[in-house]
Length: 200
Image (cartoon, rainbow, N blue to C red; front, side, top):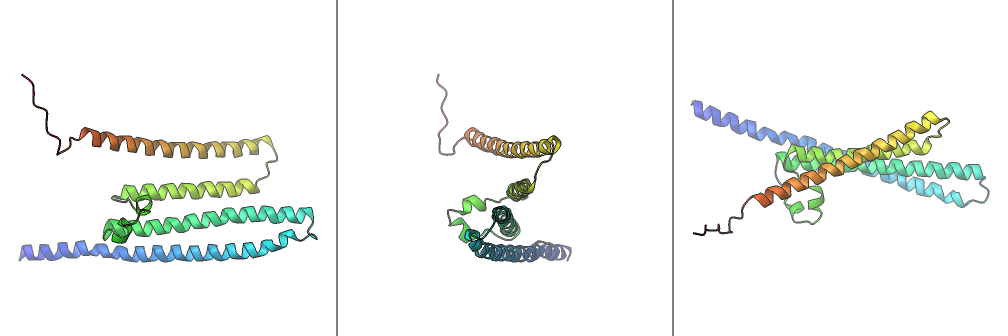
């Protein structure tokens, strides 16, 4: 009786992972919603730009339209990156808790998106995309910024330097991870390789 209750409880406990499907569906829905909203914004931005060639526009009005367009493009990139984060998050949760996505493993692009075997892999992929969102957001503020003194210009230069440092550390960590994996594969002997016999 005790073993039966234990088996039933463990089965229920293991099947409770399907609750993750709520997060998966919600993440995919949020991703599609952000894609739709940003795409609609792009459409209206392009339609609005048809007036840029109007000869009656003053130089100041044309410059304001150009600056606003650049800022809007940065916001669009930011929105698409956020949608990509939600998409990767949803698919990553599904692969971690439910099952591998069979259709993805038959695609060449899956190696660039869905090599997620642990929570650390998922966090690493999300961290990279979030870092890009922060960089794009900083660029958006930098476009609008008009430094009025040396201190504000120094703050802007310092923020750019910190962004470069963050990108360098990210690539450096990827290099160390790849070297560690290569070293581990080189140390492990091949099962098919015969061992050398000592010479007498």
